[in-house]
Length: 193
Image 1: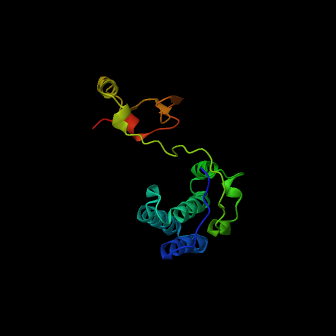
Image 2 (image 1 turned 90 degrees about the vertical axis):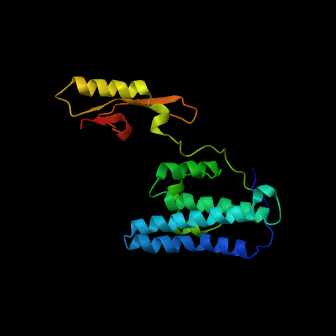
Image 3 (image 1 turned 60 degrees about the horizontal axis):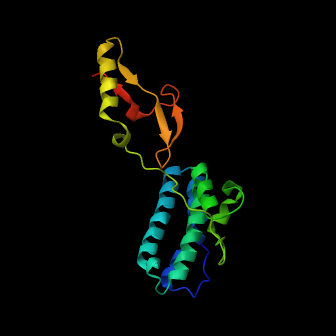
């Protein structure tokens, strides 16, 4: 998609714009004081504000204020990408690429997160899920659990058993096979009680 031309901002738009302009200072001060948890909370509050703003504006209905909502929301996502780049660099870069922005997100100066860096007319990149929702019970079948249980009950000297596992994408295609001893995960471990 292409970022639309903006119209004059209403009070909600002005508040949303101010949130972008203040985030670098708000989060930066907390980071300088080594309040990492509070800095992350501030970033989450920013994200929550924009979620509510987006829901309030209802841009999917294409009513008044839609173009400003899209413009500001896309810039808020850009701001989030820069803000989380220290915490989640790979996800931040994926967001950056999906926004159709060039270069590396972590090449930006901290203060640049508070700029409206995406202009009207900008072409967005290709959207794709950032995170794949995985529930252990979706991929851990009865035979798997039975196998682990059988192994641990037959091997009396063992206190726990783990198994190798596959990493899959959102289309359930296996990306890699991981060794449980090198990269353990909780759903692949069974302990004797």
